[in-house]
Image (cartoon, rainbow, N blue to C red; front, side, top):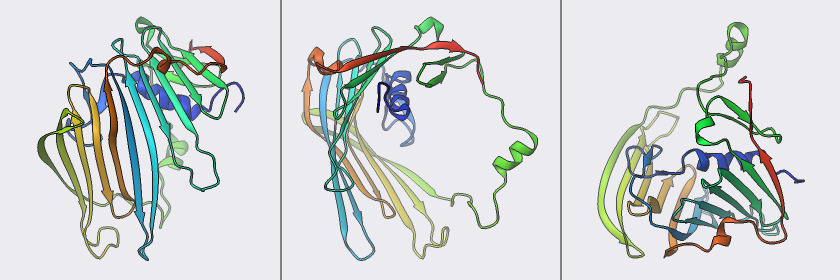
Length: 272
């Protein structure tokens, strides 16, 4: 991996940086983020994620992974994910991502590496135009857009060959309010989103029903349980297994001792 972490990992961290006070939850559609205004309670939450895929012959494949999320009273956030390896003989790796709004930085590291990458972001009054780091990571803070291709270049992007990609099938959608409940002693509100692909829309001989069920804690700005069930991809359940309310240990937001820290500072560049 060298001294600079994979760009895709940094890009993931940027999502947390750009929307630190947003949380995906029941504020409209399942994919629509909602602004959390009053959630300032610091916490550390551990989640268990179980994915079950059922094959055509009835065989099930189950993978279990975990996540940890933490936030302090200054809105420093830490997110770590430990994914089950695809093959049993592969090592388990945990990825860590920290956003620190106090010094405008993002930090990334992995459990199987001794290198941590720190990206210093521009201050709030400078976040316009395009910025880049030496690793090649780029960000557009608005105010400039890349030119769209025209002429033959545009045709090459938009032309779809016969038998190629087809338009998404029409789907019927509905949203249900599941009311309030309590998870690990915290009040949550529940919503279920259901999408139905009609029979025959994609060659299916019966309707395909996809459901997303979310239980969201307004006091934390955090989703404590979610269940996604799709006959095509399987069932994915994410649920909190441990929740501690209070200031996380400061070391939560720093790489472990002994890690080499590589620091980059973003600089303004011409927009392309």
